Structures are given as C-alpha cells and as structure tokens.
Image 1 (cartoon, rainbow, N blue to C red):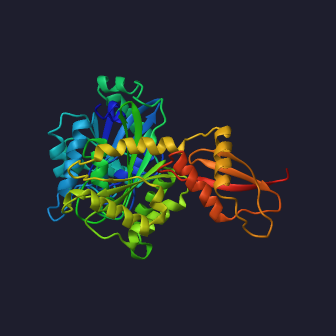
Image 2: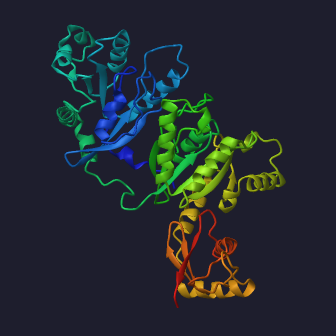
Image 3: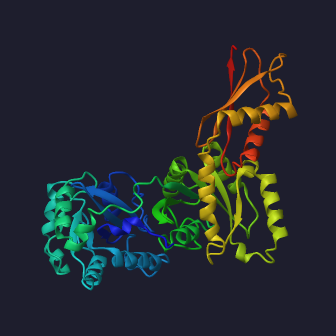
Amino acid sequence: MAIIIPEKSLPTIAIVGRTNVGKSTLFNRLIEHRKALVSTIAGTTRTSNIDIFRWRGLDYRIIDTGGIDFDKTNILESEIKKQIKKAFTETDLIIFLVDLQAGPMPQEKMWAKELHKLKRPIFLVGNKADNARFRQNAFNQEWLSFGLGIPIPISAGNGSGTGDLLDALIKALPAKSKKRAIKKIVGQDKEAIRISLLGRPNVGKSSLFNALIGEERVIISPIAHTTRESHDTLIIKDDEPYLFMDTAGLRRQARRKIGLETLGVSQTATSLAHCDVALLLLDATEPFTAQDKDIINNIAKEKHKGIIVIINKWDMVEGRYVELQNEVKERILKNFSPLKIAPIVFISAKTGENVNKIFPLIKMVQANRQTVIEEKVLADFMKNLTHRKAPTVGLGIRHPRIYSLKQASVAPPTFEVTIKQKTSLHEAYLRYIENNLREHFNLEGTPVVVYVRKARI
C-alpha cells in the first residue's frame, strides 16, 4: 500500500522571505510551541519546518521555509530553493514576510518578482512591528514597488496583529481548500508509533527519513550538521500510523559548539524522550566510534525505549557477504552491550535497499513493548527457572526465596519479583530472570525491567 501523509489533506500556508525576517518566530507563534530553532544567525532554518495549527476550531497546515538571499556563495541555497519550490506546489496561500525595522531590501524585490509568477494568493506581511514607530514603517512607499500593497504589520515576537492576520488569511483561502479544513485526517483515530532517528553527523539519518516517509522532506548534504532541527512527519502505511522524527547529528559534548548545535542537541534529546522506538544509525563504511558509544549510552538511559540498529551505507561495502554481516553484529555486541536486545538490519538509505524491512521491525518492537503475560504463565516460567538454577543471595547471609513473579506494567514489560522479607536477591539473578524472559517470550528490541519487592508472607 502506498504511503499517505495525512497533513497534506489540510489547507496549506507557506511562509517565505529572506533570512532573519522572523519566519521561524511566526511559525512557532502560530503552532503555539517552539519547534523551529530561532536565532540571529542567518540561515538557521535550512529544511522547511511543517506543522499544523488550529484557528477558530479548524486545522490548517503551515510551512516555514528556509531564508533565501539570492546569494550564489551559499552552497546550501540551491537545496533550500528546491525545498521552497516543493512548498509552492503544496501551498494554497503564501505569506511573504518582511522586516519593518530593517525596511525594504534588494533581495525582497527579487522575491516579489518570483512570487508574482505564482498563481497563489500572496500576503505581504511586515514583521517586527513591536511598537507604534515600527508599525508606521509599513507605510514606506518603497513597499508599493513590490506590487503587493502595503505590508500588514505584526509582531511574531509578542503576537501583536497575528490574530487579525489569521482571520484575513483564512478568509482569502480558496473555497476548495477551506472545505479540506473540516475533513477528518486519515489515521487520527489511532495512536501513532513514535520513531526517533538517532546517530552521529553524516550517517544518513536524513536520507533514511526521506526514504521512510516516501518523499524528499529534508535536505541531504555531505556537510556535517546540515540538519539543525528535529523534523517530524506522520505517515499512514498499511492502515498503521507512524510518526517519524529526524534529528540533528549528535557529537560528543566536548566537541559541540555553543549556539545552534547545542539547541539542536536539546531537540534531539526531547525527540528521544518522547519516542517509542529509537532507530540507531551506524555507518558501515567507518569504524564505530566513541561518538556512537555516547549515543548508545543516551538511548540506554531512556530505559523504556525500543531500539533497532540500522547499519547504513551497506551498498558501499565490498563483498557484503552474510559472514561479514555476522562479523559486524558480533563486533557491535562486543563493544556496545546495551544493543544486545536490538534487532540489526543492513540497509542503504540512498538506494532504498532493505529499507522496507524497517517497518515490520518497528511494528514487532512496539508490539513487544506492549507484551502482557498471564500470571499463571509467569508462575510456571518462574518455577522452571528456579528449578534449573536456585536463587542466589545478594547482601546478607539469608538464602532468598522467591514467592512470585508478576507483571507490573508494559512499555517496557516490567516484572515484580516478590521475595521473603529480610533476604536479598543477587543482581546477577535478576539479570538471569530478565534474559530468560526475553528469550522465552521473544521480547526482542524492547528493554525488560525486573525489580524486587520484599514481603512478609
């Protein structure tokens, strides 16, 4: 079945303009949370941010595009232009955002010239009208040379004028697109599996993200840290919803630059905290590094996340025989013990090789996280386990007696071992129980938590 991106069914508004006019600030204002990174650094936004905002009870789609200054020395500008061109094909209306404090710029005249070629409603909006003096700048006669009228003054920073702007935008939307706002989004009645793509810079996260959602949503470049922000997209595949979150590449803390990289890392940490399943990307063409280990440790700290290991760029490895795959797996498990629970798949995000194997693995891992085991089954399991190996004492000298093993919760499967008061159970025996639970009940890809409760019985 083809992949469906439900948000595309909504009326769409794109924000365009040169760098540093406040597009991301306006985007964040409309969606009512901080998703796009905001900074004074020109070109902070590279890949378009996309989200949904609600106004007067209806949903609309908003696209925050990268800033274009028509600067031929900016090597990423051609990729940003592709993103904007794609946004134009999907949008019903365009906000051309300008800076009232800075006044008209030559780049904006070039922008106006390009926008006149589009058969879309265009709103010239003057941002940074933070007070009456700056609002007066909207009446600068130079704006009229753009052929788009006088800018509508707003302040994305403090919200002034944004409500009136939204009313005007919605009123100007074509009738057909307005009808789409009241339609039910496909798949919204099911809870999506949330998947975070993690890895160090340039392992192919953005390439895989695009391959998984079925379109070029994020910019791919050999330049490290091309992706500065987290990008998430809800898709429907085989009637199942998946929310994929592409993240900024993680470097070791000592090597991170203060500023945009630190903010991007913060977003990545948030993405990991809110996901169900983490896809850890490793580069098949390079040795595994301390950076990889740091990321694995970060995933391991989030004790309730499922995990799948993706070995990317496998198409670039000479030979690619099965024995080599086994060698790589052994090396990973030897160096990174937290990954012993994870399925491992070898892919090429660039060519699409084996990418189709990832969806079944995601469903399997998520199902394993939700596993419920009946109390009687666990009782029989524990009886057989203690018969094979008697419980070992932890602190103290009293030999422990296990009264029961019961499941306490799911996501991940969590189990409570009840032992006699004033005795203790060795940690190694808890690991023995965990490992056998995982093997016996096929809990691949999910953490399994086992803890002790002491009781007077």
